[in-house]
Image (cartoon, rainbow, N blue to C red; front, top):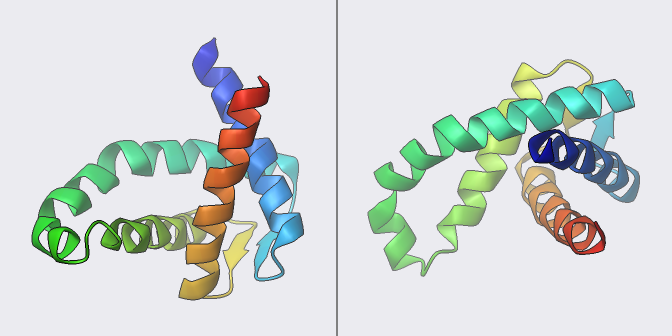
Length: 110
């Protein structure tokens, strides 16, 4: 039950972030929920592989390369989910930061 609530909160966060950022476009709330599921799957499967493969770069950049990995996952989700689009790498990076902040705020509230 907690996973479903987390997905709903992430869907709300995606919609809020798309309203805030002009470079991120999402069609419907259903698309936001699908995006939340895809992001959860990508973060569970692809992200650990990328983190392990980029450990030297992450150490040299003192962890800042993890932001690049987050942006790449957002761009991959853009490719996979119809109805969701990001206008470029910088918008994906900003979207991942805004999405993290909104998710943290919603987690504190609920």
